[in-house]
Amino acid sequence: MRVRFWGTRGSIATPGPTTLPYGGNTSCVELRSASGVRIILDCGTGAMPLGDALMQSGEKPLRGHLLISHSHWDHIQGLPFFAPLFVPGNEWDIYAPHGFLQSVRETLAGQMQHMYFPVDLAQLGARIHYHDLTEGVFTAGDFTIRTRYLNHPALTLGYRLEADGLSVAYCCDHEPHSRSLATGFGEFAEQDLEHVAFVADVDLLIHDAQYRAAEYPNKVGWGHSTLEYAVAVAQRASVHSLVVTHHDPHRRDDELDLDVAVTEASLRADGSALTIIAAAEGQELELSPRQSLGRWQQSATASAEIASATRLNAQPVLLGVADARLFERLCDPLRADGITVVRALNTAAVMELAGSGAPGLIVLERDLPGDSLAVCNSLRNGAVLAADVPIIVASAEEPRGAVDGVNDWLIEPFSSTYARARMRAWLMRSVCRWAQPRTPSNERERLAALHALQVLDTAPEARFDRLTRIAAAAFGVPIALITLVDQDRQWFKSACGGVLIESPRDMSFCAHAILEDQVLIVPDALRDDRFADNPAVTGEPRVRFYAGCPLKLDGGAAIGTLCVADTRPREPGLAQVTLLEDLAQMVVNELQGRLPFQP
Ligand SMILES: [Zn+2]
Ligand SMILES: [Zn+2]
Image (tube, rainbow, N blue to C red; front, top):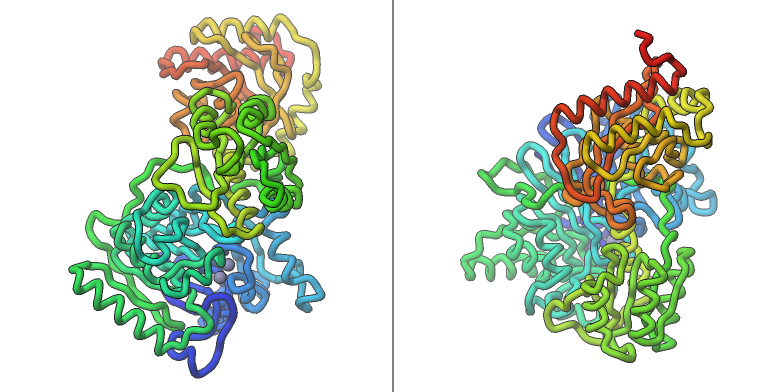
């Protein structure tokens, strides 16, 4: 794998004699796998010389994947100057964090409105596919890519990329969660430990290191790392090589040279094997595999891609905040995102509203009347919250160690933008931890075939209820359904063991099953990342086991399923699965109006 730096400066392009040799262009890194798959990390002004180089290479058509960390100028400003996007025949995939009220495409179109730029996004000649991301995993060519939210006053993703048996992590822009860690001292805990786990064992860590420890007290809340923190993360994560980047636009390159040389000397004096370099424009690294290192150690993760139309303001946010100023600072950004805010003035009200209001996120003031930390524990362990709802505590001081039930801390001083990004990240996490089903490639024909049956919204019929009763008995489970997957809903023609009539398609197991050729079996939904946080698993009817056989009409369209489900995990036998297939065929026969024994 090859890595080349095209832009290494943070915040604003800084050309001139003081930024040689590290360069004045803003963030842009190119990765190439051995097979030639091209990944571009961020699209700062460095994307222009990269685009020009690609155009001159003679390669046609030009293809690649652009991964944007966030929408601050220094990470997207090169996009309208990236020449390969203007050439018909080229094909590019663009990935970025899903915005709260707008899709990736809408966000990128913003900087190309006519007031700012003469060409709009619709005029790009290349075929462009936009991908909206949250935390999770996705693939691009032979790269497997994982994402995690960074700590920055805009919703920002870090990327961990694996290909050719090598791993590279890219974390720009990111501020330490713990202020003491920013100065190079203190213990890793909670969110900083999660950050370490995300980059654990990578061959190459490309990390924000805009500031120095001595500068940090004046830069709190600006959303960037110090060199000292980047080194501490790399050491704690057993990273092989650290490349620091996002250099401060005010830093002269001779100062940068000295800082890295001093750090390198102290690493050697400590006997550390970590290598460190400062990213320089034009620099190319060739990575070669090490043995048994750099592999992702954690369990499977849900898909990082979500539908661009996903709107994330459906659930209210509960603010347990008595202080009027703090309430305003938290409430304003939430309302700007179209989120309903519910307020509690003391811990007793928090307990009550958490149970009745179904919040998607809870933010508590550390000094709320009552014991705010004890309430986190009770909320979490007393089964008050319907699902695994995140809790953030806003506090004047850093916590001493982990507190049971608290997911994250907002430590003063913090800006409204910072609070907004943090609350957005947690809302994204709580909303998107189940995989929404893909749309089948034959969706239009599929829906036409379903609607032609004229079975939707008809009364229950004994001929279908008989079949679900047999299916439930065959599996010994309480639930068996004939589900028809309509445009936005699943509608139940027969529901043995349930009173459900319909439910949303995006939380439907059956919308996954119709994508399969065979019976979809989920032995334990809680151990399956596609379904673990699905509302039908975390809430009623609390599905643990599911088996669904697609109902395929003669033309091939899968219009729904015959499925069985249980509130306990199960491993069905082959005979049971075969019986489900037989019964599903009988459902299809009934739907197509055939006599039972006609061949
Ligand atoms: Zn930046
Ligand atoms: Zn930024």
